[in-house]
Length: 257
Image (cartoon, rainbow, N blue to C red; front, side):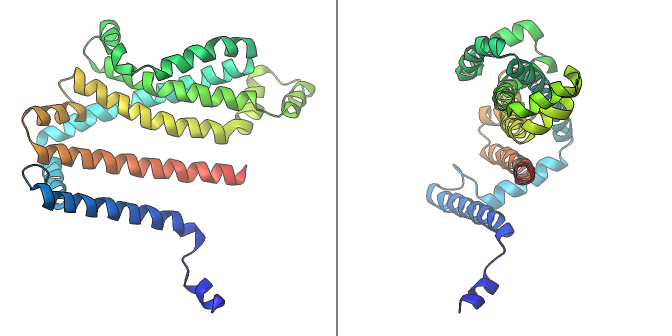
C-alpha cells in the first residue's frame, strides 16, 4: 500500500506548481461566483474579461501604451537593481556608513511614496523620466537593504582570504562578495521587481497620458469595468509569471549555495 501511494503521488518538484495551479483555479472560481452574485454590470465574468483583453491586444493604441509602460519599467528596474546592488555593497562593506544610512533608508522605505510624487514631477517633469524615477524609487531601497545585510553577514574567513591573496577591492567584490551573497541579493531583486512595477504603474496613473496605468485610470473615469478587469488580469498574469520565474531561480541559487 505504501509503495503504491508513493508511485501515485506527484513528484516533489511538481508540488509547488500544483499548489499554484489550485490557488489560481480557486481564485477564478471565486471570481465567477462573485460575478453571479453581484451581476455582470458590476463585475464582468473571467471569460468576459479575457475576451476583452484579447480585443485590447488587437487595438492599435494598446501596443503604444504597453511599449510606454515596458520602456519605463525596464529602465526603472535596471536602475533599481544596478543602483541598489552598488549602494548595498558600499554600505555593507563600510559598517559606519551603513549604520548611518540604514535608519534613513528604512524610514524612506516606510513612507508612502505617493507623497513624494509632486517632488518627482518637479524634478523630472511629466515625461517618461518621472515614471522611471518613481518606479526606481520604489524598487531600489529593498535591493539596497537586502544587499547591505548580506554583505554584513559574509563569513569573515572569505574576506580574510581575499586580503591574504592581495585582491583589489574590485576583484574582492566580483570574486568574493557577490558569489557569497548572491542568494540574498537575488531575494532583494525579487522584491525590487514587484515594487518597481508597482511604482511605474502608479506613476502612470497619476500624471501620464500614455501607458497601462493611464489606460486603467481612463477606464475608471469612463466606468468601463470590462477594460479595468482585463488590464488587471494582464498585470496579474505578467507579475505572476515573472515572479514564478524569479522564485524558481532564487530556489535554485539557494539549493546550490
